[in-house]
Each structure stands twice: as structure tokens, then as C-alpha cells.
Length: 539
Image (cartoon, rainbow, N blue to C red; front, side, top):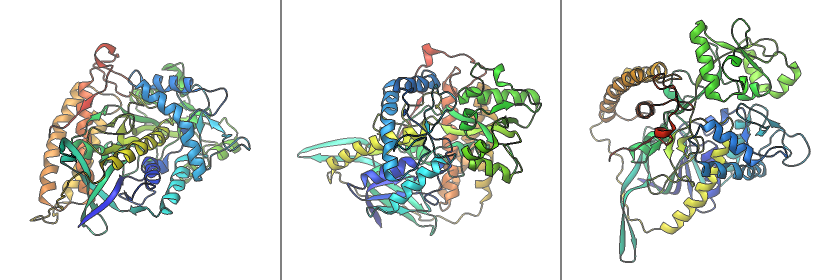
């Protein structure tokens, strides 16, 4: 049976939910989310949303900081647009019910924080649980909207594309690739459903689970990027993987992030002997951009052989720490660390994909009727390195731009597209009898990426990684076509695709810029590489 919806939204973070609420005024919306609706990267975001709300700040300063962090690869037109539109999108969130810390009684008189790379206080935050506040607000609104259907525990397998014919009078226009929905696995029942959609939006988040150590939850397997690439969409700048400098180092903590805002409030990075080391690497010290801080910590760990460095904010008033960072304080206490008295052990971890599905200024991909927003997309805003707290900002602005454009496209196309979808074919497909293949390859990919395609790279390591990932992909592909599809297999297949794309992108960039550092090419090469790295599958 074919399920029909006007707008298919794959993902339930800030980008997908913001978009869904707006397009719901113009048609039916189905949200596909592979776990519970609130299990997203957005819900884990601690720091805040960067936007200009201060008299001593300006769009020009925010733009300058963004371009500086992006290390020459930001699209300036995009950056101007996002920075300028940001405050209006945050005001929308407030009107939708979100509550942020304030310093006065005015509706938008926000208390503003400062983070690394920012030249002024401009981080709008809700204590240290900003993402959760935004996610909770959007989820409540979505659940109360009668035009929106939420399908939890559903994971998209593949996008559905075809050679399309749009009939206008006697003229028939052929499109090379047009997206008209997706095949979706219901993990509750094991059934695979076919969804037809007028417009499909990818908002599946990032792909940092491709690395062994990450701040991301288990869901961050790059599903949207991998599906879009397989469907013929261009992907861009996937070599630029942001490693957050300060993930809590504890055997039971798994992936708990110590927010950038802690350093913004004066925390110092020290080694196991209590020596402050960031001044050896940059005059910006602890407030340098993330790529600089992550490489500095990586260097210290390799020099000393220590398991971690430490983030020390014990010189601040204990009551201030508890009030400003209640969640981080409580979580650290669970592991026996009192951050008012003890330095916090931290290590870098894969955190954010600056690359993704290539889009224009409105979130459109080069596949007709397919949009991508949030961390799934590469809009040109972040360039070679994302400025702290610019991610939620970009998601808000681009979900609004995608809404405005996709509604017009949907209304213009109407019923002119003639399409017959084929249901998923499981003929002669058996249940898996070798689940060990999935778990083994999952572990091998993540270790391979951490060891060979991490914070510091070399061509030799990258070439070795590429050879191995191609063999792993062949094993996964054989397995994929022989057995029934499961959520674990879908994620593994996507991780393998993402890993290969990151490696291929890194091999193409023979320089060091932003988040990509190759020891064989330690300098920037503006003459040859002041451009995006684009990859597109041959269909």
C-alpha cells in the first residue's frame, strides 16, 4: 500500500520540526523519526544559539567571526543572510513558547553568553540545556497540529527517484532526477512502507557516529547524507569534521559533552600537572576556535601519553557554576566529579559535520523536490569550520527558507507529475543468520575512521583507510541484498557510505584548512583549494 503525504519530513530535530510546523498550513505533513521524536542531536545541544541582540554587537561582527572560523570557505552571501535573519527566527521560537535566560524584563532582553571564536556576547541560551528547551517547545507544537502525523520508530531506507515528466499543456519536460518519497522501515513491525510525497525534506542530523569517540548519540549515522548521495544529489565538504575539544573523559560517560560555554565563562585547559598549555598554541588561548583547541589537546595527549587533559573552572564562585551549568554540574557529580572543586577530565570527540548534502540558499538540492536542512546539509555557511552555536541558528534560518520555497514549488507542481511507485520487493529474502557481520563491521569502521581519518591525517593513512572501507562496503552490500533489512543494517550501510565519502573528500584536499589537517600539506593553498569539495554519484 502506498502512503501519501504532501510533505515528507525525515528527522525530528530543530530543522525538521520547524519546517513541519510551517508547511502544515499548506498541506499534510508526515514526520519520520527513527527513535522517539525527542531523541535528537538538538535535544543534547547545551550552549545556545548565536544571534545579535546586543547594542555593542552587530551583524558585521557576527559575520566577521563566522567568516574567520570558516577559514576562507564560507559562502559570504549565505553567511550574511543567516546572520541577518537569525534574530527573527529566535523571536519566532519565543512566540512558540521557548524560554531563554534573560537579564531584564523585556521580551527579548536575553542574558547573552560568549564562546570561543566570538568577539562579543551573543549566545542566547536556556541554562545549559538550550537544545532541550527548543526541542520540547517544537515537539509540543507539532503534537498539537492536526495536519502533522508523527511516525516514531520508523527509519528511511532509500529515497525514491525516477525519470519524471511534468506536463504543461502540450510540453513535456524531462528531469534527470526527481524525488517523490521514500521507502521506510517500521521497526515496530518489520514492515517496509512506500511513501509518496510532493516534497521531501532531509533533516536527519549529522554523522559523527562514524567515529569511535563522539559527542553524538547513537542515531547520528548520516542517514540523510547517504540516502541523498545514493539518489544522485551532490555532497560537499565532507572532509571538514568538527571535533569538539571537550568531551567528558570517563569510562561510564560514553558521549557527554562539556559545553563550549564553560570555557566562555572562564574555564582553563590544564595538563595533569596543572600547567595551562593553550597559550603555547594561540594568543586566543581557551577562546580559540574549536579546530585549534582540538588539535592543541591532541598534540598534548600525544606528547605526554596522558589519557586526558583537564578543564578547570574551580576559580569561579561555586554558586555561579551551579546556576549557570546545572545540568553539567549534576552530570559530573554522577561520575564523582565536583566541578566547583575538581578539574574535569576531557578529550576531543567527533562532534559536527560541516559538510553534507549541497544546497542553494533555500535548502534545495540538485535533485528536484528534495530539500536538506540542518546538519544534514552543506549550505556554505560554516565553510571549513563551524563557529560555536552557529548550528542551531543555521537550522532555524534554513528551515524557514526551505518552507518558503518548497511551498511555492509544491503549489506550482500540483498534480502535473505522473508517477507510479513500486512497493518494496522482499521476494526470496531470508532472515539474517549472521548478525555478527553487522556488529563487527560497525566497530571496524568506527575504529578505522578514528585511527586514520581523525584530527590529524596523512595521505598514507587515508589511502589505507579507503582500501579497507571499499572492502567493507562490498561485504555490507552483499549482506544487504541477501537478507531482510533491519535498522542496524540500514545504519551500517549508511555509515560505510559516509566513511568512504569523508575519505575521498580528504584525499582531494591537498592542504590544511580549518578542520582538515594533513601533515603532508601543513599549509593553506588558496590558489588551488579555495573551493568546495564536491562529490556526486554516477547514476
